[in-house]
Length: 548
Image (cartoon, rainbow, N blue to C red):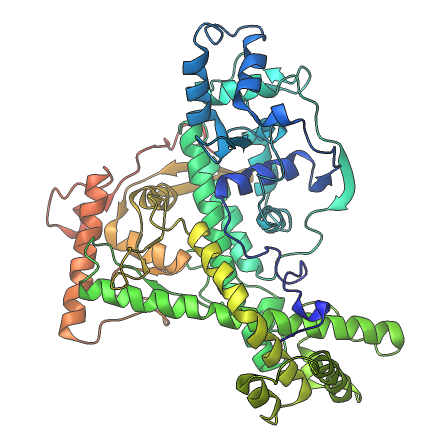
């Protein structure tokens, strides 16, 4: 069925920044680095680079001519293989059409070697920048400062004193003679994120990770940051679906959203959030267990809720367009045009509200008059007797939902790094092994490093240090902060066992978590005593040492 072009538009920066697509987190980070470098503005387009700019051999040749570089010319083939494996992000690897997408996101300057047509992030970097910029904390400036460590701003070269790994030094060497991007006047994130609470927790996590910047190797820290940024953007997407659907249903934005009570520094950040989330996690490796079945059910239900996000965004877009057009036509109306205000139009619609959307429906039907007969589903929507606004939203959602759902599922899979060591979701190849929530070993590592952080505050400055944490407290922390339920839930919306079989499944799940923590070196079961069962960090910060 044909729709008008404005009715098909999904992405609306005032409501939801990302364009749902199958994204690569490394490329999202490269574009985020570009925005950090340009202070939140889009760079001026310089035109397409020459074709040879996309070849690794070109940059290896340039590298051999720079001072302080030895051995690349004599071992060109070996150098190319190393650059391809550890330094560059490639598309069509090992094919005739192989080309550079960008450098690996190891330094703020890595964006200088970037081929835009291959390094696309579909506005996910815009969303992350909005979450960082519109927060009350200094997470944005701290992140920018860390990512730019080791570069002398005057010479634009390595400063010669900051300890850096070989890969990051190579990135700095490759870009030292390349010009900076020219900034424009267009802001990448002029509007605050719809869910401010998730943004605050993200910023707090970024600051907590940066407390380790002097003890964690840079490539490891970049992996930590990439994991947290992707995870929070995925959780943000899922939460916004609940949020917008609730606003449309209630015909007003929730008072708690207008004065968000969620802060990352709280021990239970989302305790007062009206749109809480919980995900039952299977920590075992057998997808046929009862715990795996529960986690599969939760994942299926969560991914199905993405349909509510699609419908809610179409509804918000229609309301915002209507409010803007009506205010331009009659300035005395003063209808709210911001996301927090437009749902209230449904509670007190203007006199011509129904007539305007009825006319829109007639226009869409007229577009399809020359085509074949309307499908039974479309005829059922038109004949359901709903108000014209609801009918229009249902019609648009029916036509466009399948398209957006396909890409939203791919987007969430990528942000949660499905089937990866940093992932929160796994899925097998067979139909009997569908998606289920499952925390990878490296994601557990990130969680432990964040959970064990404590701080002292003197003179307005936080000094972080690490302390072992009881396993039970770690389970509560993961649940209250991210919604991942491993043991019996302690939050109102979390899953609780109701049968003996489920009680047994949750006990086995906690045992599987301990086994995983033991395997990756964060847990030693030295005693059956409750206070001896603790998780400890891999990278430690002394209470008297330097902190943040």
